[in-house]
Image 1 (cartoon, rainbow, N blue to C red):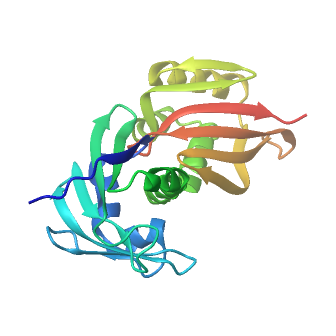
Image 2 (image 1 turned 180 degrees about the horizontal axis):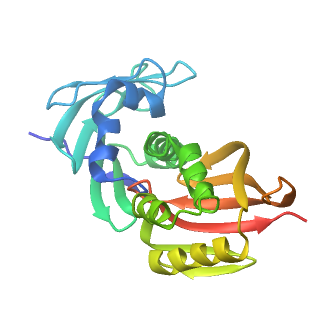
Length: 256
């Protein structure tokens, strides 16, 4: 008979990744440990062992009580020490739902005792933040290359090559905004790029320094040089990447 846990907390987050990708972070030891702590493992089958070792050395044990790829995972959860929750005295239920932004994750942690609920609210707020970052870091591991490909569009005068690159780089409804742009959609962006190369021939845009990435948002500094190599401007672009790792939007800031 399945034990009943009458007290619970709920948390819902949206992650910019497809459900199949998100689910791998519940079924692969390396990915599981990426958001729990080194040494954490999971055997993704009914009755499989769940082991969590937090970075501070605290250990949690449990077993998988239900799994349906890539939509559902449940497992028992209790501290190896017996406190504040004994092994088998709580259950974690996770459901994944595909949405336009990627994946909506619903988490419910059920407890036998009401006092345990409040003790875990901030813990899950923090842990799912680590989870979201772990997924995004893998999905957008090539963030620097994406920024470089975007900047190359403004440096490449070959129309056909730019158009081909746009199809794989940008989302169909890509938006771009800066001091000289208010663009929505690939078709509008294509014409805008053509105008750039007509009115500013030989202008080259390149990245300066490392990119900064957090959960699908990428910051990249750039420098614009004229055909004779003179610096004509500097700035920072803020990229938003989609669950398919394409550019959804770009906001450009020109430096004084």
